[in-house]
Image (cartoon, rainbow, N blue to C red; front, side, top):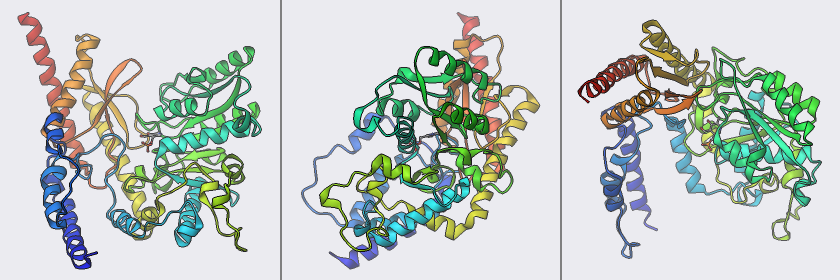
Length: 481
Ligand SMILES: Cc1ncc(COP(=O)(O)O)c(C=O)c1O
């Protein structure tokens, strides 16, 4: 091990990252490069000869970094991947050096305790009491998967883990769910045909009448509710279901109630809107991803459980090679008998360091700033009425679309994709597109500590101009045809 080389390369790297973050707005947000050229760049056999770290760094600066999606760029308002907070970046560096495996106490005692403390903080934010537990996961997908597995096990009285499902069960959620729910319902053996994806009201919240109707119809056919899922911050536009009503129905039906707040969980630190997720504490399990709206670097998801005992009941298989025979075994917590993962990255360090360095207050201010940006965009759109906004944003996510009444649905849809592609190619902004209620929308979501109100104003100006130009182009083509 060449410590001197490691030290030198490490210092260079930290300086490089500091400059990279400071000058990020001068970089192109998204690379204009053909995928085949990128594959070509990395076309090489496994290296046989050693290279110095400084030579490798140079290669990374040439081949990797220019072709990243620069999520730290203030114009990044896309799929929910935050600009990572700098304290979290340092934490990940240290976590890799220590390489604690928090699956087992014996491979990371202090890391296990820190992880449990971070889970406790998240449980406090939700409003769970001391009986609660949880797991940090790779993200919302795995957290939702765990929540649905916990629900399957509880509702079937812990029989399904051993016998499989003995009868037909259904899961209920709004049509605005994230696809992780579909994958999880499949993976725990319920089957995607038994996922009831129900319509939403004008605020994109699950319609309670539709839920009641679906449950009644299923029961007539001998299909029983195994889990109801509430969305506290939909992927498309941050809508939050009526969690209190969903909890009451789950209790009546004697089934599990899971809340997906993977993204919307950030509202729990908002200084301005602290009560937006009313009723979240009534859930049996909750997904919250620190790697979304707590601005932690990937990966750090979390599943929280109201009753920690349910984790042991669902995952408490202990093979002989992993038992703890010490006298302190009750205190030497083993994450691997309380969750899916065996080897487990030390994810809590970045969340712990973020909260310590910035404090909940500052993280809440970032959240509020992003909400203000979405609300400002909504205001600009509604004032001019050239575009329309799906609904007043409750969080940082907003969906808007161009209104061109004399274009066909296909033309209008293509116009949105073309404008998004043009903006992507310019490299100053990046956002997604989506479909809701049969229409194509621009889906804009600043989960970004560097975005300012000026960026939002400029984005609006560009969007309006490009949509109008695209419409004129379509009309010109039509006239010439
Ligand atoms: C509401 C919701 N749930 C779950 C997920 C999946 O999270 P991850 O990508 O961290 O697995 C997302 C991702 O955007 C989401 O928006």
